[in-house]
Image 1: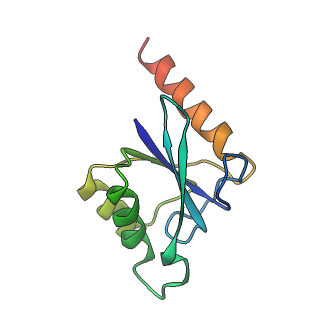
Image 2: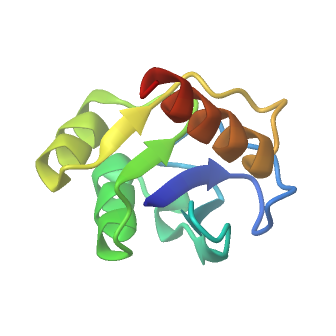
Length: 112
């Protein structure tokens, strides 16, 4: 599964960004191998439409789920339309690696 995480930097040790559309980076992570691709978020400086643009960006990279702090209504609509699951409530005191590990652990717990 490809997981997108809104992040403050381009590494697994970067902090999770609580802002979806205006985060500095997205990390696209393969949950099987934990290999990742950092993507600079060009929408960070947009006057409007940053959320839907971010949704298009991670969709183009094959993301199936996004881990973030919060998603605005326009971004939610764009993510829903792209079929990307939203896992919100992640805080900036977690690293990207911790957030992904927690998400996968919760998935495994739910499926038992």
